[in-house]
Length: 104
Image (cartoon, one colour):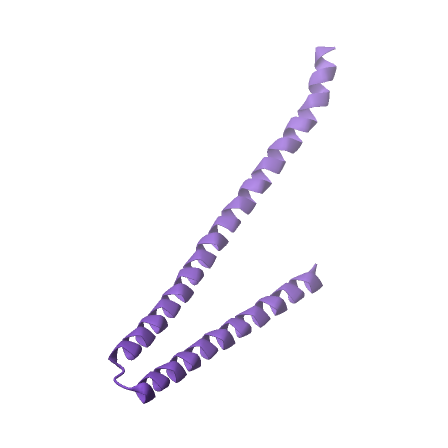
């Protein structure tokens, strides 16, 4: 009786072991992607902080209304550039997802 139960349990244990190793491999891959995405997010934040600091310096040094207006135009142009960059990144992600679905 013990031999029969052992023979029934053994395949289950092997299946669980294989499943656990597969999920560990996926966890490593996700960890690498996480670090990559985290670095990209920090890079984008640094760019925005830098642009905002430039705008703050410009506004602080503005001596009249026209100078302040020029600062606003400059900040608006920088924000539009950021938006355009994000739009391109979003389109590229959509395209990659679309290609992955086609390949499956």
